[in-house]
Amino acid sequence: MTITPFDSRKGMTRRSVLRAALGSGAAMPLVALSGPAWAGPAAGDPAATRLRLPKPTGPHPVGTVQLHLVDRSRPDAIAGPGHFRELMATVWYPARGVHRYPVAPWMPPGAFRAFVADAGFSDLASVGPLSAGHVGAPVRRSGRRLPVVVFSHGAHSHQGDHTVIVQELASHGFAVLTVAHQYDTYTEFPDGRIVVPLRDRQAPTRPGDFAADLRFILDCVEDLADGRNPDVDQRKLPAGLLGSLDPRRMGAFGWSKGGTATACAMLADERIRAGLSIDAPMEMNPPLAGDLDRPFMMMSAEFGRATNPAAAAFWSHLRGWRLDIQAQGAVHISYGDNEALFPQVAKVFGWNEQQLQAVIGTLDPDQAVKIQQAYPLAFFDEHLRHRRAHLLDGPTRAFPAVTYLL
Image 1 (tube, rainbow, N blue to C red):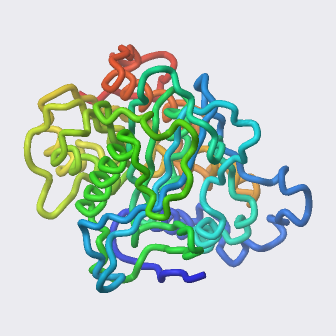
Image 2 (cartoon, helix red, strand yellow):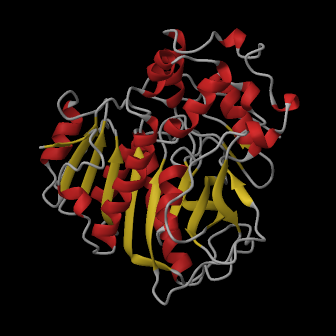
């Protein structure tokens, strides 16, 4: 097992946000995290202490499968001559007959251990949450191909960090492909390699590199749609997956740097019919440029247009359907699985409400989870399936914290 060293570069990352919160007194000092406030699984039933994600609300059970991919159009200078861009991706989809298939962890165990260790939470390594996805379960076929959404994670994060949204979409009939952006993520390859964000500043970790990954994932969607297995190891795929995806109805979304990458990819690739950014800085060099006439939605927090010129400039070039919403009390990491997981972590470590809010903001966590489940689904329902989503028309009593920004 090999682990790639970590890069502490500048920029908004999940790790830097958490470190800032820890440094401001939002949590116990790191040296205290292994103290009596946390007894660990050995003190009781591991099932009772395992972190949990909310169940998706859709009518379908969820299946999932990993893909090991290599983009042979992009040589990998970091890996050396003869190597090409190597990625792990995960497909989530509506499934059937799931009961005899195991559920997938939120992250591969080795990657999760590296992730929590880097954040100073090593004592949580054995209690990582499980997803709602059943590994290898057959695809539910309804006579029509599945609309597709691809997801791009944030800087120094991982492809599971918005599983709440991903499995919600899958439970409502979408296929979702999440990608682990090599050299800026925590993941595990089939041969046992565990990778973490890389120290080399020449690594392909810019939003444009993420966008190129997304476009390659679209190519893989087309392969799957045409009955070809893109997995480089040719591992067995779930029954019904080949031929089940609809490459004519593809959308994309991403958080933070991944949201910027979503915008970049959408400007470059007309196959992406609808895009959603979750608190994305929209900062690139060169800057994002060009008009976009396809639907685009922004879920803003700390990178809102009022304070972030790059986001405002991108918004001004949206010529099609557009929407910008903001949940009062949300911070940068509020739109993600953090809202479901950190309240549980707070109980484990004995944080008070003020300490928890210093990490995830003042938005009520239960409301935050419901916002994540409702708004992306409504957006992609409307623009990939032409199912009118009145939720997007304006403020609603169901979500009083959500403001519609003009």
